[in-house]
Image 1 (cartoon, rainbow, N blue to C red):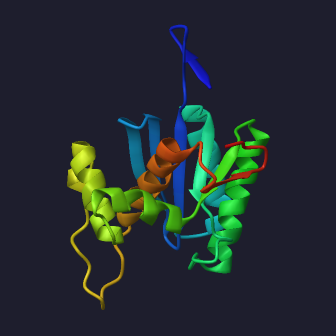
Image 2: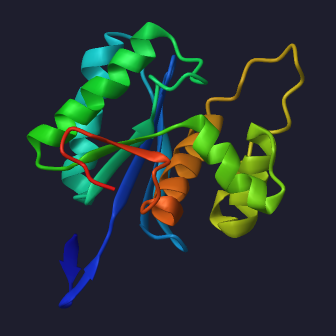
Length: 180
């Protein structure tokens, strides 16, 4: 927990690695999204991604790093992305930041309360909740189209918000010193 003017708060850095780089979202409360973006990485992807994660950790000084639980039975991530998520948690651990893995199943369960059942519906629900994200909302994808790189912002935000709003439940897996 960080302190700001004598008050304790939880700052969450949520990251969604992808084949093109990663998206991220920073929360200071379930209703306070303070930063978001994507990082496009073309060469030496793992090394550059880990360096950029280190920079985000230093810039935002989060209380916790949240990534997708790539080991969950429903995870559909490549081995490289799963390994990268674990390496991101290791970078956070070296900076004293605990890490948590949130399964996509937990995200779907959490957003089912808002009648959001697909990735796009979850992104729309997030844009409704955080109007600053409206400009980054990708168009609804056709089955033959590739996913927009901007989708990773919404995936990261969904993981972070699910962590914040369900962190006392057993749906979260602490990684590397984190505790639910």
